[in-house]
Image 1 (cartoon, one colour):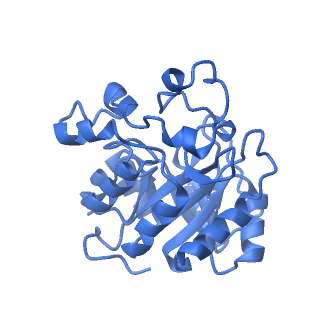
Image 2 (tube, rainbow, N blue to C red):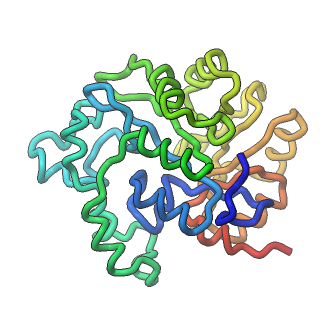
Length: 278
């Protein structure tokens, strides 16, 4: 994939976490569009599945943190996203929470203007197809994280459906990668579509544990909180490439880039874009 002319310095591969989620509601088109506008090299997003089998972007199992599900569907707030139809999910407000909570402080710092805040109340949960089309139209880059799905879709063929959608949109393999903590998903991708890059996610947040296993995957997306230079050096000596999530401090960005990390996934792509290295 050749970065387009609006994107940042070529030696820093800058991936916006859930879109530019410090500047717009995560996993919405607003966040993805903002990441494009500020010059990120690509986005990392989370794939979920509706009750009726449609592919969408959403991170949590439950809808309560980032939508108005309690108001729209009283009594269903403890039901996972997989129990809602696409029509039900598209009726939810997936943006006002961001304005109300300012999760990463960028509104308070004056970096989200009034017109942007007003538009966020119209944000909806996007379907994967429109996101992939956005990426294709701009010759951009996307990392799709495939999560373990909650009931009733624990056995849903998510890899097969995602690959079908990629083919339907005709997104070139060089414009994407697929990551997961569920390595069986990665093995399925590798078997079905060896031309698509896979990234092994390690270091589940909050676990305190990071296991590189036998270094069988060529690329690891490791948890920056559990990673040091020795781990990076060892992985690279094994012939692996290393990406890190979620790196938000500019000094840490410099430190990890100097250690030979390939890509940084960040909530603040605007800070990584402006990073000045010695």
